[in-house]
Length: 555
Image (cartoon, rainbow, N blue to C red):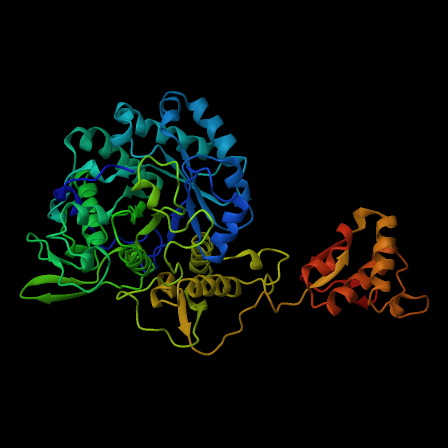
């Protein structure tokens, strides 16, 4: 994390950025999972906390094996980091970058859903001597991913310190520091645009408030109602400091983009699309060391609601000036810093950024599904669903399906052999994924856009419910007849009705251990409510989601 910036550097700003694939979709909010403490819970316990909180993405500052393995098979997206200490090696040696990617990314993907590599952290601020090596290191890591066919799923970027801007107010004059603007930022922006990777920026609005509480109101930086602040050059009114910060970043990006026009933000509000780089807040948070917890709570929940799209961009013209009401970060993803209070950090402020104490009790209540506060939209109807629009065609449905599954929807149930794989059609699978994404994003209307491929309905459609989908328990032939016989005897002796597999019974044939065990296992499994443990049988049973048929006997 960078040191506090002067007031002129803190008043940064943002326009509405179009999403890389679906401009109507909302952003996501994750957490920075630091481990700089000696009293933190185990990775396995932390993963359960992430699940309970519906946190769908995580950033870590290294490649901790315990953390990466704990996130396996969870669907939680993970950004790993190549630390500053290894930056020079990655920049100068493509073989080093290839080995690093093989050992720290490819070895765990896709079991662990790694979706990004952060190359270095705040290099311009924390490791200035490595500044010129940053982009070469990013290119070598990208090339290593491409060599393994992973560059489509895993993106390469670098978290940039907020102080990389020399000017941030008014936002429309946002610009990078002279010593990095052309030599580093220009090629970096070109690299990010070429690879479809996000521009990552670490921003801390609360620091601006601490620097100048007389001129920056609590309401302005915590997403509470306020009169806003106007950019005198564009007439754009900002109702929260976060939008102002991010807007200056975007203008700074435009200022170094080859061939780009440094258009005003109103171009975007009018439907323009001159930028194709997605902004991500790679760190954003609030330390409650000098800030009341209630302010940090309002900020965190306001940020979540804002980012998830609860605050849609609405524009109106007043006296010839664009007055953007609630515009901002709906298309910008963010990682809240940090998951825990970490007792080995350098000072009291750094030790008090956590959303949770080390015992996993909340420092204050945060709702990762909806957020809260004035930016929360009007409540959605009691029940609504998102369904696929078959009329857009399979290609657009597949794109929407891929986007939903790649941005937080749990698509495990529609994989081959899973509970909701059937019917195996684009419409059915897209509807399942889009609705899961929609529900996870609080049923915000823009969370069912998918570039026109989704529609909201208010009568329950026929969408597979994994908890209700039919399933069966069958025997695993590979364990051998002895284990199958033992499991068969156990099932028949503990409640399964095995009369049909007795000699002369309707399911006696085929007279094999696998057939008889499958019948007994499934009868026991169904009688015990299809609980997963009711199909264990010491490893001899397996759950399937398509009705098995053994001989003439349908289970």
